[in-house]
Image 1 (cartoon, rainbow, N blue to C red):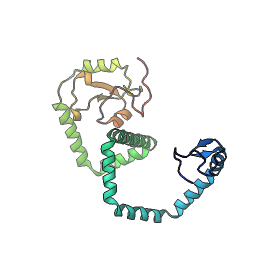
Image 2: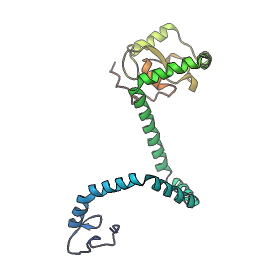
Image 3: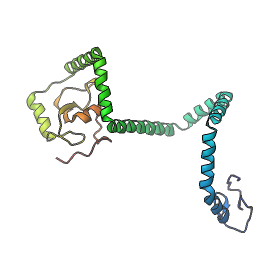
Image 4: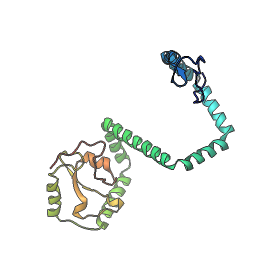
Length: 218
């Protein structure tokens, strides 16, 4: 089938000028015929790809090696000509990957917890070093708070996790100490263990994380 071009004023399949153009340069009759056979064509292509997967990969590799400079130059020119599109694509790709990782960890929580416990048992020295480093960071961070101020922060959020709204069990630094966060009361909020583990050192952006349910209005 010929590719559609605006210069065609007739059906590119049967060549008639008596039928009105419908889509893709085809008259209604030819378009309906093509549409009806699409499932069979797709199935035939998929079967061909499965049967010739190794040959297709080998051909693609040989073609790239033979035209490597040309493909690299094209990719470089495309990135320079479409920086916004490249940034949007990378942002979407990274976001999709993070969402997949969060969902996988949620669905395989028992497996992840068992792996973490096994890793801690096998690497006790590294665990002690991490705990010691975190304690040093907290002690050297700017600011301080009293027990009354911390209780006031918990009462402000009703003792609920500020991300998902369930009962809080820990206190979180909204801006992590590892990222320059302080120990001032304004940087402290109640959080549940699950959200604290998933948030890690990510900065709080004022919204609800993808894995969290909306926090009830206080």
